[in-house]
Image (cartoon, rainbow, N blue to C red):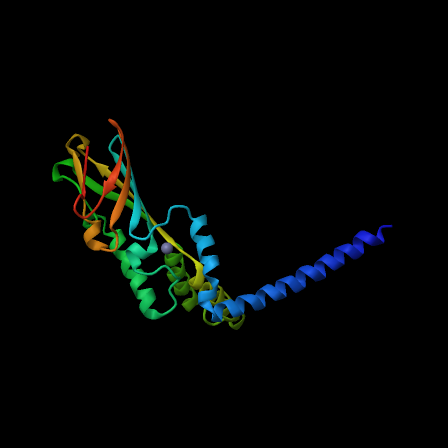
Length: 223
Ligand SMILES: [Zn+2]
């Protein structure tokens, strides 16, 4: 009697295995016929929620002398593409964007009297991880086995390339010595990243919450 579940179990394993193999094949075909896979692309887009190219979220929290700013943006707005970089040119572009995002004073301009200075920047994106990975990979080049593994990895990345929308998150922490003088913030990031057309602002300050839309023509947050 115990034989039946066992058989069923091994059948399932076999079935799962052949399904897996089939899927794998399917993906290869999909890779060649990129345009036929658009359905998948939409699924991915939906799962990320409101990811609309040209639009980004800007969340701002002022608490005591600490100002936290969080930018959540489709990678396209900042980099010009959303696939994981594979060519040297793509990787150079991604590194350039990382460097620009770290230059907080070129993105946000505070009244000088507020005495705000940058404490910390944290950047997160699959595109950034890809650049950092490949950097590490160069150092590990000696290991043939690892090298082989990395090729598989690259394949997966190309796969993402066809389907994925990717976001970039940038977190900034500032300390302001005279918060009373912080009556506005001018957003210069529209100039640094002209593909960004609209920022959806959520701000929490001691005087309350405010939301709104910012654009190159309306780039001032007033408190
Ligand atoms: Zn996208």
